[in-house]
Image (cartoon, rainbow, N blue to C red; front, side, top):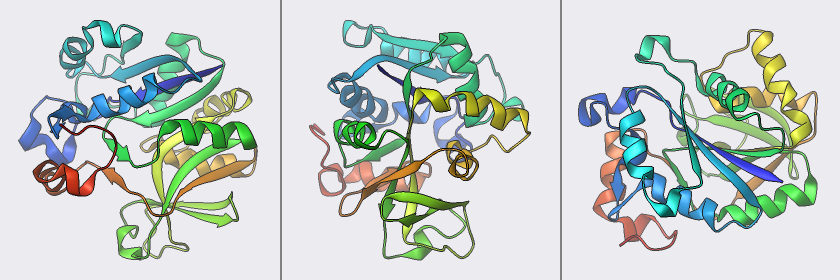
Length: 253
């Protein structure tokens, strides 16, 4: 059994002046909110059983209103009860809170509400069950500046992850980390131990270097497709101005 959790409890720091309290996941690209692309892909992925989304106190009313229709009736909405940015739990803290509240103990897909990729989730899930270890999505890039001081970087041996750095100044590989992960159920207990050992909780990818020494970690590689972290006004305007040019993930109309 496979469940899915969408992390949507950020405070939109880089888009604050543009969004105010509105969540990034509800920004529209091609007349559809970002979160709709993600949810629609989850709903057609046959192996996904349950879906949940965790948000904060500020964005709760927005997500509650969006999810209030029959199409998304199976989506469980969780409020982490955080009211201001200075009290944020970090992505891994939110992951821990959600798992406790949901009492989930099965294989788990973890996604973020502001990232779009070209690969359908069904392909990534098939890759996961073929290897059955922790899976992180990565994208191959020829431009190391795309990674340097900005994104996580994975070092691979074929499709095994053998090293990981978060926002390195000098990336060691051409594989940038995309925030989509699948945890086998046996590894969920490692999230709790990671937190107990006082590691950083900000980014969902920060746990990868911790997991490498404990379980088999694999990379699903996007070689010719796209991934977009819609975290700045420039990226959002680029995609929303011409979605047909930059996106090819179903209906953008």
